[in-house]
Length: 105
Image 1 (tube, rainbow, N blue to C red):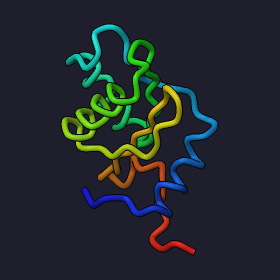
Image 2 (cartoon, helix red, strand yellow):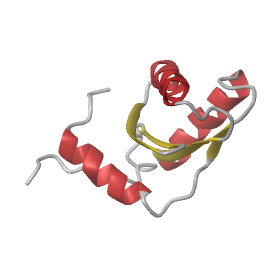
Image 3 (spheres, rainbow, N blue to C red):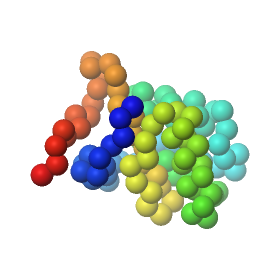
């Protein structure tokens, strides 16, 4: 997957603003069931918000976010407070819901 550029991340943050979290990171942290839920959510929605319930320290949240990026092959768009937003491009054109801008203004 090609890395997102700044204007694309800004576009995705705007789309994610009104969305509610779909995946929640609780006491177990990064478990296989969390990764499966994240993978399914990205397949279905392309843009997914994750809420950190237990891990409130920034270093722990960033470490978990990096592991999610590497394991699921997605990219973190933003981390605001206890919410992280992830994006993964849908290769199937019929299932694709988000059309990323190709060039910035």
